Image (cartoon, rainbow, N blue to C red; front, top):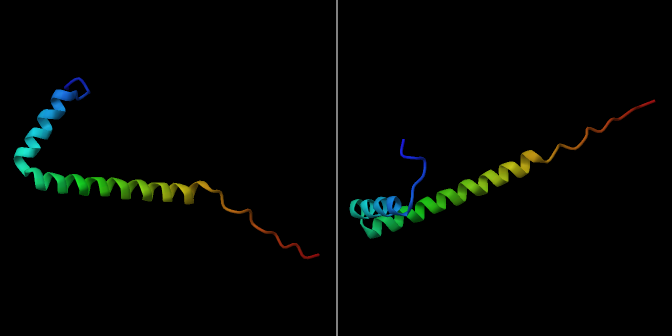
Amino acid sequence: MFGGKLGLPELLVIVAIALLIFGPKKLGELGKGLGEGIRNFKSSMSEHNSTTTTPPPPPTEDKKS
């Protein structure tokens, strides 16, 4: 619809509008919260991947003769 990419002018307009709507203090808090959310998501995904990518140990077979 819009060419599929955002350039620097478009990003500056978005930041300026967000600054006008939320103000500098609230925008900083929103950015901090967003960063923490992304960091938590990445750590939980890497934790999930590390637990699911290791194959389970082979079953032990007890053969009684």
